[in-house]
Length: 62
Image 1 (cartoon, rainbow, N blue to C red):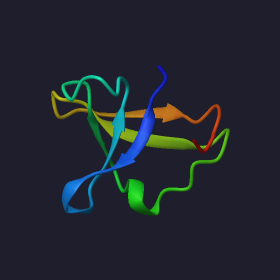
Image 2: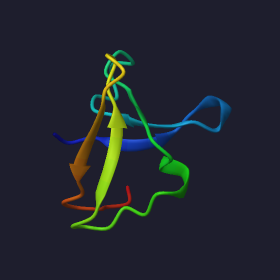
Image 3: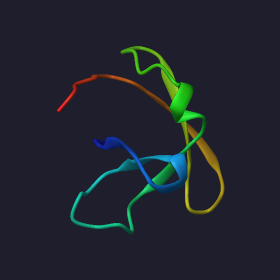
C-alpha cells in the first residue's frame, strides 16, 4: 500500500492513501516521534480500531 504521512489539525499525524478523498485517512501511532527508515516498522490504527504494523520500504520527501 502506498501513502503519504501528513500533519493534520490538532497536531495529529495520519496516513493518506488518496489526496482526493478524506475517507481513506488512517491515524498513526506516535507518528510525530517516529523515524521513517527503510526496513523499520510503523503501526497504523485501522478504522475498526485494530493496530497493524507495516514495514517502511521507501522514504521520499515531496
